[in-house]
Image (cartoon, rainbow, N blue to C red; front, side, top):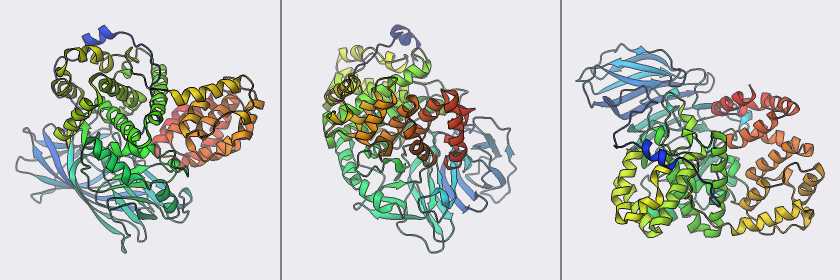
Length: 620
């Protein structure tokens, strides 16, 4: 998954403190840690295969059907326990034909309700008949007016981190993998897709069948239903989107087949069959979600010039780091995202060159520093290994996991050499394929298969300062910043009085513009904002990354000519990465708060429940 700050890099780094203290706090043994975010008893009775049979009802905005689970006993137990969130459980049928009693336990405000079903040692399967509730966190039901086509409704899921339980009774932990097949009934004329083998044409009667033969955790369960079409890129890649958006989506994403080949050259074969991308309606709350075989992505990357498709490199990289080798618990989230950001940048470097990817490292460093500043330089939430017991796991979905995790791997690469790093990572993905891993297990593997080759490597890296220490360690690696220095020179010239039209911006990429906008002088008068706008038409840009940064400057500098375009941007864009800074900036002044609440009252129905929760908290 791409975070709230999705783009990245590392120029100058700040020193973290408490390195020696961190060494004392590091765990001594690599024992399997309890997953505090599942109520299930998967350590005793574990599911192995799901047979899902559901119908999608747009009139009632409910999913109804059954979940048939095969399971196995790991320890003696008198019951099997599933995670649920506001599900109505109609009945449970055991594989011996008997109707099972069940208990839906009291609801935890974060984790939902445990569904406890008595079983005997002779039982190997059961079927749960259920329907979703009125506020399923994973689901966004869109009316036709909220889609691009304006004629048909749309439904999509977002199951990460613990939201699969709101549309399927399941053992919902990243360390619990299973295979699945599904039958999904939707209104005739609509297409259904899942994180599985997918159709490329619509079913006449609205019945669809799916199969996922590789074991996946519940957070990678995905479903989308709507007026969707398909366009092939090559023999194993293609693009899905609403039919009116499909030509634009295909043109923007026509290089995804090349990306797959580039990734395979780095770290081995793509093991999921097809790699397709679904471009979702505008309310999708994140940049992308790495659902196996079918990446879900935001339409905000469709800039028209392929300048934002680096997001796809990130989601593709998850096919190795995250989907193939998965963090065992949400405390180990950096093993998913830090690896993926590092791998994404290697794909990008192989495609566009080092000076290009260096800009991503620098932007990433800026995002990491902003996360440390917000969380606190000494906060344990800036450790790579998190402690989320008793808390919402989404607290850990910050740029620490993404950017500090990637910077750590970048440091390892610089220490041991790229050839050694690539051999190590190839072996890591091969030896842990379709398995889960926690931080201590990875560190033991890193030591045995790489760092033990040279006695000085571990000392130079100082693993404890990174994994069990706060802030940004003193040995944070540096990337080149040649292209950004040129952008900074133009920023300084503008601050010194050079008219915007005379700035040397020829050939700038999105990332140079981002760096320039992030470093505009504070307190710019309206006249200078107007000068920039007239020279570069920033208020009307079709690039969502630049629009967000420009609107942020407009709020801070009270540049009212940009407000109508900003409001329209917020009405139709549900990506949290863009929403949060804009609403927070408006909230900083009394008049801005009034504007923010007015915009949000109109925009809220277009936002996914996860985004609604975030903005509700900001504006409360």
